[in-house]
Image (cartoon, rainbow, N blue to C red):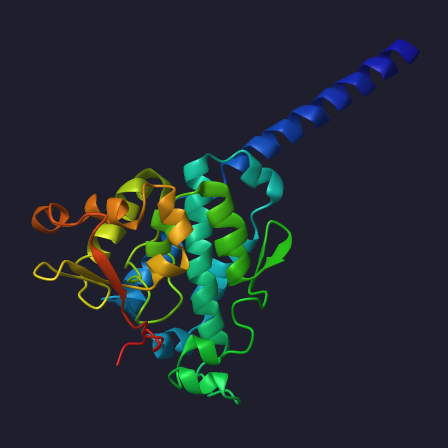
Length: 267
């Protein structure tokens, strides 16, 4: 009788361990790395990089579900992901977080103080402590936009293309894609973001006669990240039209364009 009881206990223990392994494995693959819901959401509410915030707020449940899905990822689940999966997760998280700040404060009210006068009345900059205020709870930690950008994306992935993919809800930012960043297409999407950026005159314009490149201050703010890829000019030559790339050199003078902090809102 005692031997039978011991065998039963051992069997129960093995079944318990087996169930735990199955559960862990299932959890690890449960997250949708195509970001289907976020992808559908962007296709519905974003056009030419501009967002229909008013329509989103008429039925905010869809966006709330997207946030909940993102926040449901555990650290254990995240730990077994590939680098591309992690990178796509954090890029999407930044863009979702920036949008959440806008939706939580919409319509944006002009802040008080001299610093507020520097920005448009509807700018994300009017939201108090917007860069450092926790906006999402990811992997069990409350994170801000600054944390996502500087402590995760920049420190862990060392890919300067991220600066042309994360969107701070402003016209001066890179264009918000009408699709989510997905693991299988991430490199193609990031390359395309840079190519689209250099086609935008307000962010990239080359005066061949004077050998002057008028460039978005994004490249000044995060210059050190591009230095790791051979410098700003070297990086941009890889994505510029051939006739422009052939003329750019380290002797090319860079002048920084003004950054438009107006909200990326559909009119």
